[in-house]
Amino acid sequence: AQSVTQLDSQVPVFEEAPVELRCNYSSSVSVYLFWYVQYPNQGLQLLLKYLSGSTLVKGINGFEAEFNKSQTSFHLRKPSVHISDTAEYFCAVSQNSGYSTLTFGKGTMLLVSP
Amino acid sequence: GAVVSQHPSWVICKSGTSVKIECRSLDFQATTMFWYRQFPKQSLMLMATSNEGSKATYEQGVEKDKFLINHASLTLSTLTVTSAHPEDSSFYICSARESGTGGGNYGYTFGSGTRLTVV
Image (cartoon, rainbow over all chains, first blue to last red):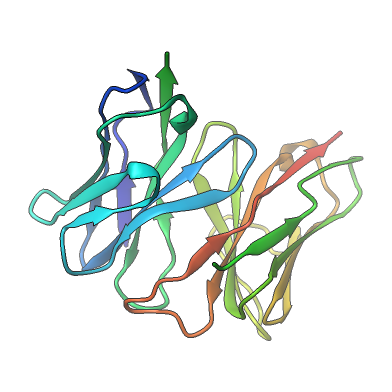
């Protein structure tokens, strides 16, 4: 079984400032890692995913994340946020087999203010 | 890219009635679909996994007789909330995994969700 911990339930930040959303995972086997964004009353949109290879993963909307196996982390970063980035962000993990389910963290609300 | 259409986006129903939510993969075949429930300001909780042509696998604590899941084709799965009560009010989201994806090609696509309110 695997689990995901998103330590920050809410992260307030000013527009154009950098941001990091933290994600730690626990698993007894190798994993795939994902970050999703959810806008109010909408489904989830994939920002990026780590499957294998380079530990630095670049996604949509200027986001990137780095897989750190020793620290079992997959933190999400953006060098300069916009008001439109205000949303809920979910980190998710699955076993690295083709047919495993996703386990989600509790989410981090990113609040960008002018 | 892959698109999953979920309908309705919102529904209000009276207590005791049943509500059906559809999840349709528009441009790909989905062997497996997932149904999640999300309470306000909380994460997604997996309710069940449905595979085309077979019975759904429900997570512990989910009433299979209340939440009926049908996955009759490779592009359509439905969730029916039977005899709905106010405590069933929630945001329900489906997800579809494209057939044949696995390993390095991980194709999960989410629907836009359904807000169910039972009055």
